[in-house]
Each structure stands twice: as C-alpha cells, then as structure tokens.
Amino acid sequence: MEKYIVRLLTLDKLIQRKSTGTPKDLAERLNISESTVYRLLKLLRNDMGLKIKYCHKSKSYTYNVNSEKFDFERFLQTAYE
Image 1: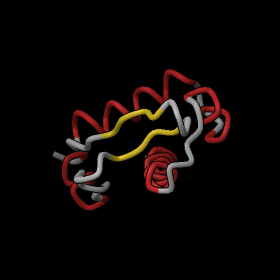
Image 2: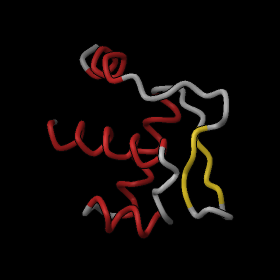
Image 3: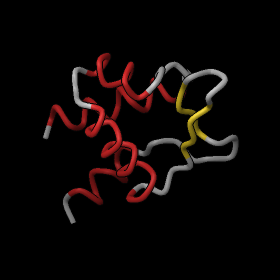
Image 4: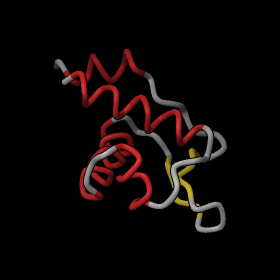
C-alpha cells in the first residue's frame, strides 16, 4: 500500500507542476506500466472526483483551473471504508 500512496503523491506533484510528460514517459518515470498510469488517473478522476485532463500542447496531464487538488486524508478515508 505504501508504494501505491507514494505513486499517487508523486503523480499529484507532477500534475500540479504540469510535468508528467506523455503516458509512456510518465510510466517510465514512475517505473510502472502505462496501464497502471491509467488506473491511477482513473482513481484520481473517478474515486477522488478530480478534474484532470491531458494537454497535447504541453504534453502533460493538468488539473482543470478550478479543480480541487489531491486530498491525501480524503483518499485514506476512502481507501479504508
């Protein structure tokens, strides 16, 4: 579980900095598969309700302007319910 949390926190930081790169780049950077990248993004979008989009111009995932940011405590509450 610890690895999973670290990955989510790292992904959140990269999204905030708009420096994720392409899904392939991100997978390599996090040392995970592309399918795991998509699963993590799905969790952030669907389970955490975050508005994340991919910007082709900057080649990075970004939070929508008015989107909430990743709430670690809320994630932990959701994970253990």
